[in-house]
Image 1 (spheres, helix red, strand yellow):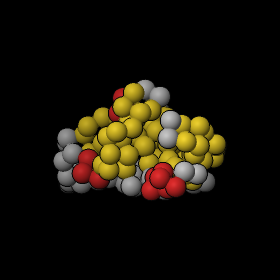
Image 2 (cartoon, protein in one colour):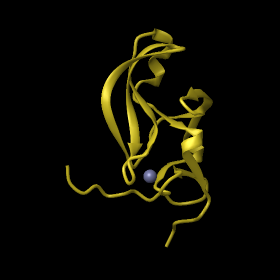
Image 3 (spheres, helix red, strand yellow):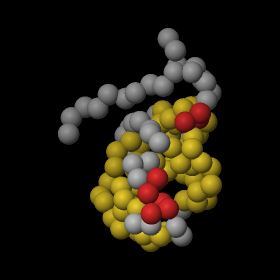
Image 4 (cartoon, helix red, strand yellow):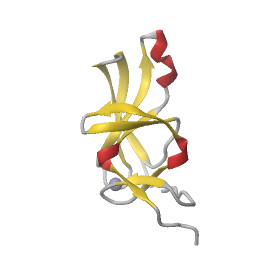
Length: 115
Ligand SMILES: [Zn+2]
Protein backbone atom coordinates (compact mmCIF):
# COMPACT_ATOMS: atom_id res chain seq x y z
CA UNK A 1 0.00 0.00 0.00
CA UNK A 2 0.96 3.65 -0.01
CA UNK A 3 0.74 6.49 -2.39
CA UNK A 4 0.99 5.56 -6.03
CA UNK A 5 2.19 8.09 -8.51
CA UNK A 6 -0.22 8.69 -11.30
CA UNK A 7 1.36 8.55 -14.72
CA UNK A 8 0.52 11.25 -17.23
CA UNK A 9 0.76 10.25 -20.83
CA UNK A 10 1.81 12.93 -23.30
CA UNK A 11 0.31 13.77 -26.64
CA UNK A 12 -3.05 13.43 -28.32
CA UNK A 13 -5.12 10.31 -28.54
CA UNK A 14 -5.21 8.92 -25.04
CA UNK A 15 -7.84 6.69 -23.50
CA UNK A 16 -8.66 7.50 -19.92
CA UNK A 17 -11.17 6.82 -17.18
CA UNK A 18 -14.69 7.91 -18.08
CA UNK A 19 -15.32 8.98 -14.49
CA UNK A 20 -12.18 10.87 -13.50
CA UNK A 21 -10.06 11.27 -16.64
CA UNK A 22 -7.06 9.35 -15.33
CA UNK A 23 -4.88 8.30 -18.26
CA UNK A 24 -4.71 4.60 -19.12
CA UNK A 25 -3.09 4.17 -22.51
CA UNK A 26 -2.17 5.79 -25.80
CA UNK A 27 -4.66 4.96 -28.52
CA UNK A 28 -1.89 3.79 -30.84
CA UNK A 29 -1.10 0.95 -28.41
CA UNK A 30 -4.37 -0.74 -29.26
CA UNK A 31 -3.85 -4.31 -30.47
CA UNK A 32 -7.41 -5.31 -31.24
CA UNK A 33 -10.92 -3.90 -31.15
CA UNK A 34 -12.52 -7.32 -31.61
CA UNK A 35 -13.36 -8.07 -28.00
CA UNK A 36 -16.58 -8.05 -26.05
CA UNK A 37 -16.88 -6.99 -22.44
CA UNK A 38 -19.73 -6.78 -19.97
CA UNK A 39 -20.78 -3.45 -21.49
CA UNK A 40 -20.23 -4.14 -25.16
CA UNK A 41 -17.17 -3.57 -27.29
CA UNK A 42 -13.79 -3.88 -25.60
CA UNK A 43 -10.20 -3.23 -26.70
CA UNK A 44 -7.02 -5.25 -26.16
CA UNK A 45 -3.75 -3.54 -25.16
CA UNK A 46 -0.31 -4.90 -24.37
CA UNK A 47 0.24 -2.48 -21.51
CA UNK A 48 -1.70 0.18 -19.63
CA UNK A 49 -1.04 2.40 -16.61
CA UNK A 50 -2.87 3.76 -13.55
CA UNK A 51 -4.99 0.70 -12.81
CA UNK A 52 -5.22 -1.73 -9.91
CA UNK A 53 -5.95 -5.42 -10.33
CA UNK A 54 -8.37 -7.39 -8.18
CA UNK A 55 -8.48 -11.04 -7.19
CA UNK A 56 -7.50 -13.72 -9.65
CA UNK A 57 -10.44 -15.74 -10.85
CA UNK A 58 -11.14 -18.46 -13.34
CA UNK A 59 -13.60 -17.34 -15.98
CA UNK A 60 -15.19 -19.19 -18.85
CA UNK A 61 -15.27 -16.95 -21.91
CA UNK A 62 -16.32 -17.48 -25.50
CA UNK A 63 -12.66 -18.20 -26.31
CA UNK A 64 -12.20 -20.71 -23.50
CA UNK A 65 -11.30 -20.71 -19.83
CA UNK A 66 -8.93 -18.01 -18.62
CA UNK A 67 -7.49 -16.86 -15.32
CA UNK A 68 -8.21 -13.15 -15.18
CA UNK A 69 -8.18 -10.22 -12.79
CA UNK A 70 -10.64 -7.37 -13.06
CA UNK A 71 -8.93 -3.99 -13.24
CA UNK A 72 -10.14 -0.74 -11.73
CA UNK A 73 -9.07 2.87 -12.08
CA UNK A 74 -6.32 3.68 -9.58
CA UNK A 75 -7.87 7.06 -8.87
CA UNK A 76 -11.63 6.45 -8.53
CA UNK A 77 -11.80 2.62 -8.34
CA UNK A 78 -14.29 2.37 -11.21
CA UNK A 79 -14.27 -0.99 -12.99
CA UNK A 80 -12.78 -0.57 -16.48
CA UNK A 81 -11.86 -4.04 -17.72
CA UNK A 82 -9.64 -7.02 -16.95
CA UNK A 83 -6.21 -8.50 -17.49
CA UNK A 84 -5.38 -12.03 -18.63
CA UNK A 85 -3.14 -13.95 -16.27
CA UNK A 86 -3.36 -17.31 -17.96
CA UNK A 87 -5.04 -18.84 -20.97
CA UNK A 88 -5.53 -22.58 -21.28
CA UNK A 89 -6.17 -22.77 -25.01
CA UNK A 90 -2.86 -22.67 -26.94
CA UNK A 91 -4.41 -20.31 -29.49
CA UNK A 92 -5.23 -17.82 -26.73
CA UNK A 93 -1.82 -17.77 -25.04
CA UNK A 94 -0.91 -14.49 -26.74
CA UNK A 95 -3.36 -12.70 -24.44
CA UNK A 96 -1.47 -13.54 -21.25
CA UNK A 97 -0.26 -10.39 -19.56
CA UNK A 98 -2.43 -8.18 -21.75
CA UNK A 99 -5.26 -5.87 -20.82
CA UNK A 100 -8.85 -5.32 -21.86
CA UNK A 101 -10.50 -1.94 -21.50
CA UNK A 102 -14.23 -1.68 -22.01
CA UNK A 103 -15.09 0.99 -24.56
CA UNK A 104 -18.14 2.24 -22.65
CA UNK A 105 -16.07 2.83 -19.52
CA UNK A 106 -13.21 4.83 -21.03
CA UNK A 107 -13.10 8.16 -22.75
CA UNK A 108 -11.01 9.55 -25.56
CA UNK A 109 -8.90 12.31 -24.03
CA UNK A 110 -7.71 14.65 -26.72
CA UNK A 111 -6.33 17.34 -24.46
CA UNK A 112 -2.56 17.65 -24.55
CA UNK A 113 -1.11 17.26 -21.07
CA UNK A 114 2.33 18.62 -21.91
CA UNK A 115 3.13 21.51 -19.61
ZN1 LIG B 1 -11.20 6.92 -12.61
